[in-house]
Length: 181
Image (cartoon, rainbow, N blue to C red):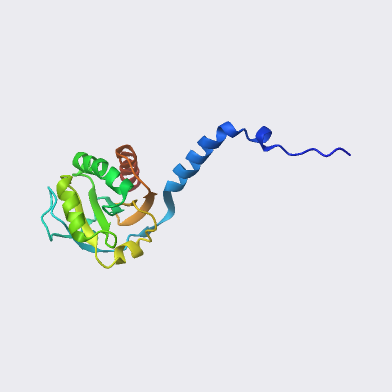
């Protein structure tokens, strides 16, 4: 009996490895829940942005009727910083049909760092800090940035881990609006 050695290169050519890795990372970045869960309620004191006054309270429970996009971030996180202008453009384009809030993790950066960042970048959407970390824990945030999609009924319909683009936000808004109909 002749032994043959299994050659993985013949079964799975190495030229497919980069695309396989890309697809694995891509599909692991975005998850959608089959059985949406109720979004944990929270209230956040906001920083001053172009559209919001400092110390205005963002109360998730008062957002019913509109989908809400919650972005968990911090100023010294390079992908967080990179996605913020995209999120702001998305908000400006869709502010009449969706609520957007950025929730800053406090630890590596201070609340003042967050306030300075949103002022310097001329951010329009609601942004505030999670001073105790409770909101991040309630939403089970393990990766920064993470974006959570809440439909108009207050149910979490998906998560996006890692940097998000305006195109991806547009696509998620369509899904949120279609699920409401």
